[in-house]
Length: 188
Image (cartoon, rainbow, N blue to C red; front, side):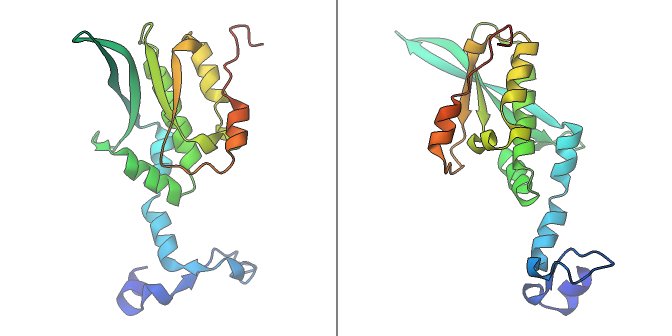
């Protein structure tokens, strides 16, 4: 990449992942070399997910009744942690995850960490964000989230899944059919 940037115009250099024994097999998959650079630059998100370097913040959800403030629940917000402990904003995490095709994996990791941290909230609502298209991907769907909720004995009626607004849901009927039914305590 250094050579390309110093001696060539990267916008006109294309590349493709290739096997040594058949280097011309995937020529139709060629992309500008800048795409590969972005993927390399975003590699840190894979490590963040694998190392579970995600922390949660609690944002109170309040109700005001006759000038009295009541906390009715908490939205659990996820942030990434750099190796030195500094905070990574969510937009930066999800941007890198999108480049690396790890959006569902990051969303799942954030949901599971949120549930783990929600176990200390007693009787109040717990708002957890999720990417609505996660329900299309069995590996990262909400089943693992529901299983952890049961394992930690969190009351299902406390959980409110909040659909993030940044995602364009194509199949609204599929989402509505899923309705996120929580298995009962006996697993039936």
